[in-house]
Amino acid sequence: MRRHLGLTIFASALAAGAVMMTSPSFAASSNVIIGIQREAADLHEKTNNFDEEPVLSGGEIRFLENRGSIGQQLSAVIRSGDGHVIVVDGGQEADEEHLLSAIREAGGVVDAWLVTHPQADHVGGLYAMLRDHRQDVDIRGIYYNFFEYDWYREVDPEESGMVAALMEQLSGFDQTRLHPDAGLGTEVVLSDCLSFRVLNDPVRTDGAYAVNSSGLMYDIYVNGKHLIILGDMGETVGDRLIADLPIRDITCDYVQMSHHGQDGVSEMFYRMLQPVNCIWPTTDWIYHVENINTRFRTVLTKNWISKLNVQNNYITIGDDVIIR
Ligand SMILES: [Fe+2]
Image (tube, rainbow, N blue to C red; front, side, top):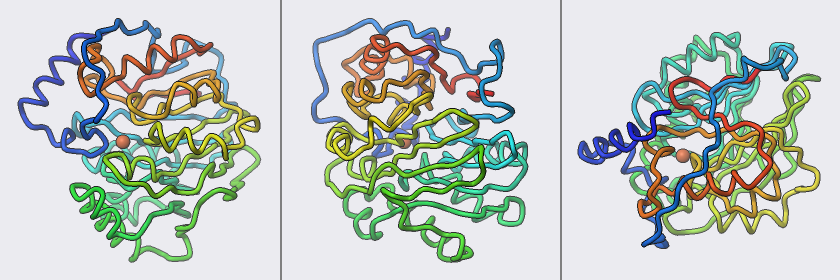
């Protein structure tokens, strides 16, 4: 466990003015809690389930650690036992080669590429695939729901460059493979072993977390297990959406922790989901910050999760998370 190394990297990243610190995903919160320092719960983290019996009947859930930079990302490649593949988001552009190799290891054909929201730590990898690897990766469907470009430029000017770049790549892609109106009611069955549904329509708000909370959430079924993707969904919109979510109809064998495990959806949201396993698409410098005075409040989420009956916490630190 490299608890203090994370703080070192975090400090170094701050000193270097690291790129990811400028991401509006981590814009300063207006309600930072001050004067409290709590000890984080020990969640007995791991990166894979290789020491257990396989649970996915030949399928695999893989969340990629970012090897191209030290930034956070959400990038997942999900392969069913019968060889169908879903990619979620795709992570940072800098992690392009890692993503390409993970897709190739899964067979090189992506049946469905699911996008939560168009920020660089989520769609940079998709942008890179469309720009550099159209001949290498057969993407048969891209599911997303974006607002018009001017909205992103207004609420999130620093990240709007990626939005424009991605939109340009999508405009030159086979239009019959694009699904730009994904939302509540979208359900796609790729095989008996792999399917997904979208859990919400995008919500238009303002403020620092507007783009995070404009994202889509997904329920992915793979070989008998359900993986819930939350993207970077925030507390306010998340709580509002709970009323519309088919929450009693949701089985949550695995949940992707919102917003990289901190400042995402609320404790109530996680309590309603009742996840059996949590997957944290995080980094050392986000996950191991234990001082609640920082804007990175992973410690709060860890404490919430410690109170639930979660069996395993998988973290993308030191290796990809791989569940088979
Ligand atoms: Fe993010």
